[in-house]
Length: 223
Image (cartoon, rainbow, N blue to C red; front, side, top):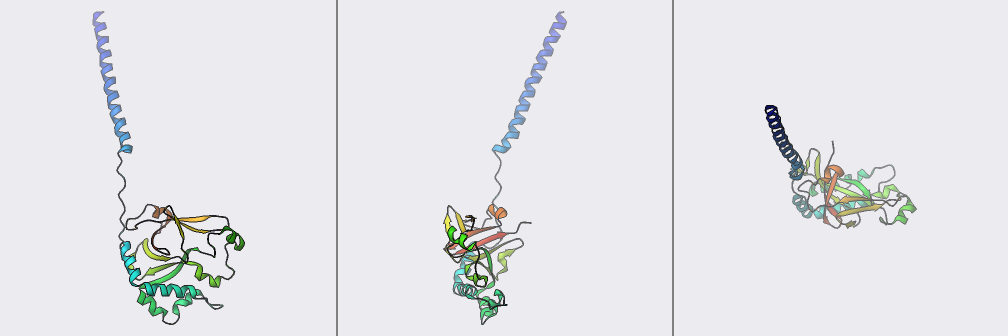
C-alpha cells in the first residue's frame, strides 16, 4: 500500500509540474502574440521619385507671367458656334507661348466654380447649371501641366492648379463649391507632397497651396 501511495503522490507531483510548465509556455506564447500589436513598427513614409514640390513652385514663379497669360487666354476664349473650346490654343502666338512657358497642356478639372459658389440659394436657383456652357471656361478649375516629363512617372504625377476664386480652407481642408443639395466636396491640403500622403491612394489627388488661388497637385491613378 505504501508503494502505491508513494507512486500516486509522485505522479501527482509530476503532473503538477507539467501543468505549471505548460501554463508558463502558454503565457509566454500569448505575450509574444499580443506584443506584435503593441510594438508593431509603423510603415515607412513612402518617398515618391518625382521632383520635389519646390522645383515645380520655382518653375511657376520663373514662368509666371507667361503661365498667367495662357490662363487668361483660356478663360476669356468663347468659341463661336460649331467650334470647340480647344481652338483657343491654336490662335495667334499661343502655340509659341505654350512652348515658351514650358506648358504641355491646360485642361479643365473638377470643380467648376459657378457665381456665388458658396450660396445654396444661388445653386437651387440655377440647379448647378450655366445657361450658356460656351462661356463656362471662366468658371473652371484649371490644370497646368508642365513640359518637363520628370513630373510624370507611370501612375503618379504633379502639376499646377489654378482656381478662379479664392477657395475657403478650414482645418486643413479645401471646401469646394456647394451644390444644389447643399453638399460641399472637401479636399485635403498638405504642407508638402514630397512624401506621398496616405490619402493619395484613397482620394486619388492631394493639394499643396502656393498662393490663394494657386496649388501644387499630386495625383495617383489607382489600378
